[in-house]
Length: 616
Image (tube, rainbow, N blue to C red; front, side):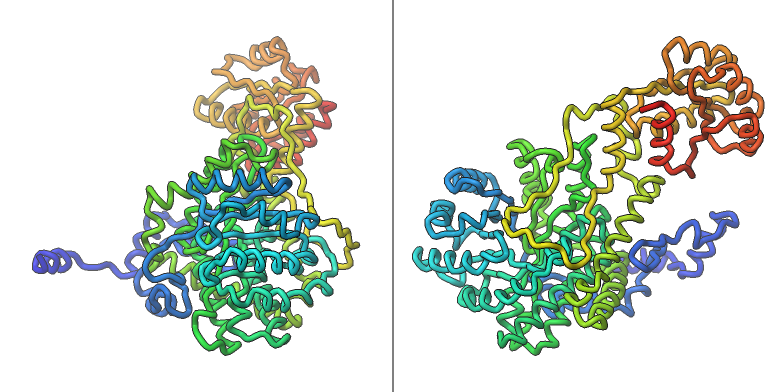
């Protein structure tokens, strides 16, 4: 067998990188390699169209083994299992308990309870956890930050009352006062003093964490991957520094910190993010000189993004969250939450929650993602992404250190300005369709109606309404602007756009399809056609159909012949639009034609302008 392999490898000469580049240049026929094939990412580095073994030989990321420092390849050696987690908003202890027991029989092995501050007491917690084995199931809690210490004391008493082996209790309390400072601009300095007390209260439970870093909030506000990575490191280091300054042992302090990170749609980049952030966090923790490398292990709960979720064509949310879940699973996270596809506009139904659970179970049980440790290891591309993200994320971390730490940067508004700028850029890119949202700004469902669906606003169960003293982050989903426009159109009246197709068959069909997709983004009714012999015939057909907009679809050369006669014949009886950006555009504008739709248009602003002209 070995002889056969040797013969196969010796029969073919391995091409060099330069030979590959020469061949590509020939195929490009003179086009610029860097412009055509090099991906200029939003993360601060470029991605080449191909990678070879020589590109990763100089990297350190492939050197370690799974379960070994710096844990780039994961914190586990034998498998890649993660906790399948589902969140429960607790209003009634008995009802929440009933739901928890039910979903534990449906594949869930991690529960996340959100409890009102008024319910933080021993009786309520006992009812809530009745019949739930907290030494088998991971249990996570979130309440008002000011009541987190009280909740910890109640839980410790409950665990001790049940006689649980403290080493087998796995879970967390989501204590993260910095999050409110970052997202809402509230001064939470006084609340941060509870951190060391929380750690001391739970120190005998080695796998129960109580200090959390919620960069998922940045993800949901539109942060780029490298921003979330860099700020996660600085955020976590802020807590680690505070705990050790308060006299907490470095090993204990690090073991109590947990990261809740988002997962965006960039499949390979997100996979690499989890590898990179583990590696860098391990390096940070080591600087505090812990007694064992186990303290350097990062614990990450991954949560699918809300930023790219949509109200319209909402079943596409399943596709988004599925690839996101794949990234996190292959990236080696501790636990994962897949948000139900309808959570953007309603309280998730039993159906949507079941589908969300099954999305993870499919990956774990049927695709066997839970059995393969660091499946991306050795991939030239993934190793490159891991290294590049680590380098760029480290720059952000160092910048935060130069500002005096993460919290000081938050006080100055540096973090908020950075994320808000990214959010604004991404909304602008979506408006120009440089960033696609399938079913919203690209290929919308022409006939879909909102049926009363409206985006939900985030509500806080905390009764403390402190006034903001810092800058805040403006968190708006990417689809929100288009959804607002479409709902406004739907609530007013739905105009009809009629495609006047004429001339060159290929061009008229392509431009009619483009225009239909363009105008349907605002909820317009679009009518395509097979073609007309004359522009007069097309205009008559449009007016007979009751069209509000007539879109001339033809080739650039033929617009010089057709556009002005069609415009004059229409005679302001409907809005006239030319599909494309022809060379004769200036001549057409001089003739009075104002409206053109093409790939360089700002789709959102153009549609808002059309609504205004139509009196919508």
